[in-house]
Length: 468
Image 1: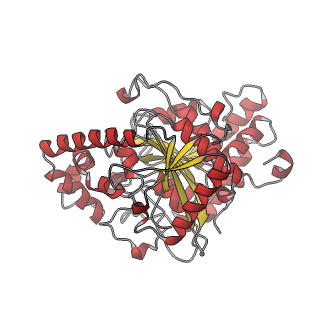
Image 2: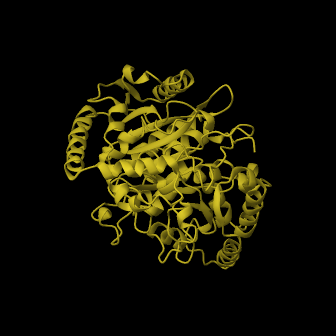
Image 3: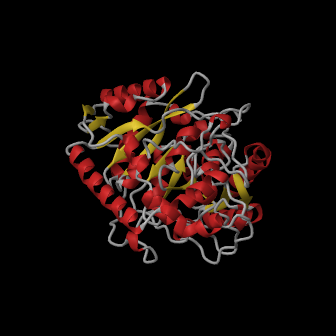
């Protein structure tokens, strides 16, 4: 969007990158941006229920400070004054962090997560905390006791917002934040991005610090940006990634700046089409959007390659021992106590971890190591694997079966230590978003973003807004 077309535009409708440019150029004040977003939150929040808590007073103070610093030539960076929403797993010293659990409504953080420190140091303004599935343990986005955010793409019928980063997905889709942070253990950035029409980046383990983020699975948890475009996701990813002495998984991980290659296009890249057998059980409109996406990337110069995979995606849904055991370690004591208020489905998932033996746990790690090796062999010479992100668009909440997982296409990326990008690629007849997933080898986030940016330059699905 050029400066002329942005003139007079409601700041809540601008992308994060547009906001950053206009604030830095002093065409827009962070105070106006924050006030506009807070007014929109006040209007929509009673219906959408995206936020656990809104930090109105502190956000306004931070906006006033940013305005003065920028006007006096003391901006701390290119993102100074841009607001963000944080999933309610991310610790902020002195603030309540519930992890989506009614049992922790009064749990006050005693430290600030590394990623929050990096954003605040860059001048980014925290608007508030967003809802999550309890302990981040679920993909549909539901929460019995803290409340389920309303997917803004259907104003009449409650539909799945996607989880576990449900509030982050709804807040960004409904223009109540320009971007947000989610976490992804089996798809929890990509699932709400799919159902809410966003661009979400699942990073490789160790790429972004998890210090100060309430854990579900210490082995698989990855925080990541949820935004309205690949460009925005790349900007936030670039800020957050890098070594952190407080997170041993990040040690030795070299910084990866995606910006120099973001606009190189896809000409000459070899992109893998998922096997025909994987189309079974996928909604027809999802498959139509997927096929169109491959055609577009082909016309942009990519070579679409048929590949054979060493396993079915659904097989990864059965390798649950790792997550079950670690989730039980983190919150099993609450599940064992019958007096605690826990979501029924979350309690069942947590108690499943009590039955995982040390042998089961270690066997799962060996199986995953074997699958990872076979997957990397299958992708030899392939720059990315393309799949739908979810099998369907957002379901009615009344249609959800909590014993089934929506993470058929997303979970392998976590278990096999890969990275992946979800981005809008179509809509159902009712206007609900559909999504494409770009899966790359571990630590090749720049490649996933490059492919996604080329796709978004040729399409406009990411520019659609819900009817709220």
